[in-house]
Image (cartoon, rainbow, N blue to C red; front, top):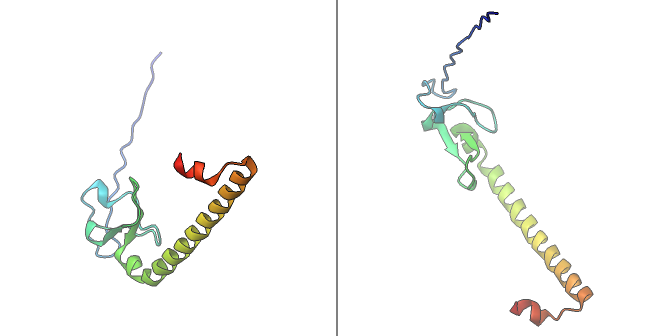
Length: 110
């Protein structure tokens, strides 16, 4: 029995949608702007400075500039939500402590 196998090579060229420069490394292509989807060269790529993960969100320089006021609003909303979350967790903890009859002092000392 013989088996014939065909292989095909696919080659893709990436160009920056802002300046037209060819992508020269893996960093320059693969994931586009998370807002508009544009492919970007290094010069026009902005990595989210508030994203500390291994793969931070990528923005094209145009979307980053356009989004300034929106990022400020989003930050404010997240800050307010975090404060509310912390307050609810504090209330939850107090109820749990009261339910168990645990003295607050013993919780803080442990």
